[in-house]
Each structure stands twice: as C-alpha cells, then as structure tokens.
Length: 185
Image 1 (tube, rainbow, N blue to C red):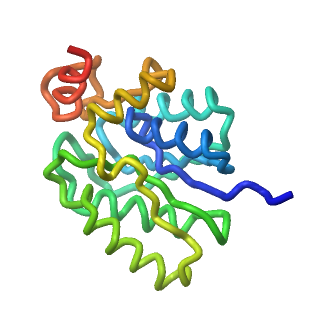
Image 2 (image 1 turned 30 degrees about the horizontal axis):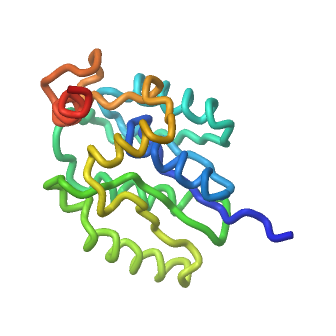
Image 3 (image 1 turned 180 degrees about the vertical axis):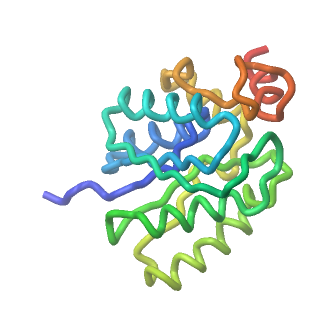
C-alpha cells in the first residue's frame, strides 16, 4: 500500500489557508500546518485560530517565531509570502511533497499571482530538484469562490480569524475585514 503524499499548509488561521487544509486532507494527503509569527499585529488571534483549526482537523501543527524587531500592521507587506515560503522550506520535515498556500485571484498583491507561483517553484527546484512542489489550489479562484467552497464543505469558518488589526471581526478598517463583510452580506 502506498503512503499518503505529504503536504505542508502555511496556515494563517484565515479562511483561505483553512480551505487548503481541508482540500489536502480531502485528497488524502498527510497534511501538516505551519504558522509563522513574524510580529504581525493580529498574531495572537491568528495563532489561536490556527491551533484550533489544526486541532479540529487533527493535524500536526508547528509554530515558528521570527523576531524582526518591528511589528507589521495592515496592508501590503513586501516580501511576506516569499519569506513564509523560504522559512517553511528551511524547516520542512519531508523530502518529497507539497508546500501549500491559500493565495487566490482577485487581489492586487503581486505575491498572489500565477507568475509568483511559477517563480517560487523555480526557486524550490534549485533547492529540491523538483521534489517539493509549491501548490496553490485556489490560485484561479476568487475569495467568494473559496468562501463558497468552505460553506459547501462545512469547513468550520467560525474557527478562522482574518482581521489584520487584531480586532473583533469584521472591523471594517482593514482589507481582510472588508472582504469578509462582502462575503457574509
């Protein structure tokens, strides 16, 4: 009998990365989650959501703390997704499998694009000779399509957290909560 393929989901505790956890488990992958504490304002609530979701799905969960000696607030953080991916690559505990993110279309962030995915895969190939694949199952989906996927699959959205400001959701003052307001309207 062949063992399940490995997948590591970079998990923020939000809707998109939680959809990824469900997606890979549903496909039969040996799925693990990784939360990165990089000094984000909402770190405590995001970390709690990530832990609760990992517990809900009974998957191994790892937390990495990186001290930048500064904090990050709402909006674009240059290099964020590339940093996450390289940090995860340095800490991955399998030699063959998928590294996964819930990035999607419909955003202006350059690190949520098909070109970004291709470029990261090229970097991964340098380091892993193609044994680690950057997988983004929702790259061509909109946020509302991911939300529908979650609702259709009974994903525990009540456990997720997405406010960039660390406030009660939806705060209405950050991009993530503006998206959430549109989804639940």
